[in-house]
Length: 263
Length: 263
Image (cartoon, rainbow over all chains, first blue to last red; front, side, top):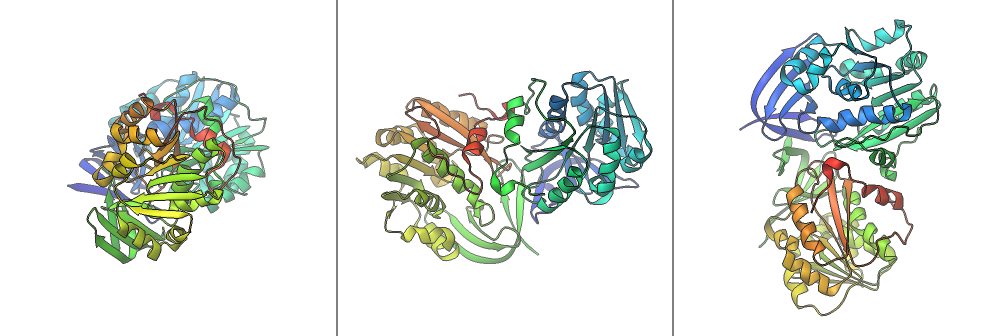
């Protein structure tokens, strides 16, 4: 039996039984691997951290996209930082936006997704999607356009994703949008990092919306997302999906005391 | 580095870094082990399944006790099936009941908890607690007393815990109480088992309350609980703890579509 493991920041190790290594590439930024697992379908790992599995990726992608869109009421022009697998774009396309700009640092993530996760990767060929292969932090420094929504679909704040949690990055994002949404790690494991990020976000955005989702293959099984928004955050669209519903979103903001973040 | 692993029903393997094996006993029922881990404090495993860790046991124990008590408004006479570690009793004692009867099949679980988890095990010495070392299914067959509340704090429905999910057991419970609460495994992984249990419960109890909690060290990180109740299930007590609050309980019933159970 072959196993592939992620050594999590919790100190726990989570191991998947794999049938086959489908792809392995050391890009200029990270080690990209795609495995065929027994129980979770195909899985992509970056630097041996689980990015997605076919069995539960819908939870992450629904919960990073539908809450901020619900607050906006609709989208025309969206910027996605990271997210080269295409899952976030797939969810955004459900609202028929005019344009999605995806800024992914690592073109090999896009290549691997198109080949091994066509249910996500193929949407990146949609004509409304512009892909820019560049460092997201560099991109937002120089851009002049404004966006309805910026989604930061980053890796963990170590390695190439680190800069996407910095105050400098937040200030650049603030210049180009009124709504920024991003994944913010585990409220059980990464509490200081989340507090730090919220502190930065509060310096610029009027309101912060913090919520969680159950993602079985991520460390601790509970994951958080944070939206910075410059208007009153009320739900304006009532659509439901496999995990996300407006009620699930309302409830996902109701954090148990032990998981709350004071920033 | 020493690791100890649970091979989960998902096919995933979760491994803890351990400092030391504190206890290991093959009782007549199961293999009981207590480990000192690096990141989760002490951990008890039964047949190499994680039962509890000091770092996150409060979530399980709060969420198996406070929801049914909230629906009752108070408790006088409670029966706990399983739960020999004492965590459930610890939470029940916060409501000053007159009597708690704990029916644990395996006296070595109680011994291990008293010695290695005094924050749970020591409450079992409280004079309102009667401990009966017996098979819970046998106990409820012959008992004549009625209870305000029965809590089924069982292991997984394999091994000694299996019978506690059967329809026969439910019918025996129904004879002695109007409220039964129990852990019902993962809504991501054990969907058929939950559907089966709900089907059985619905034959006897008027209402079913199904809710979830995030338990980082249990398979998939999301766990479910089910209450069978013969009156209208509304919250009558407003107390909050580390994980449980009345609002968290309300929201814990709001299950994402993908995790809902049709029975």
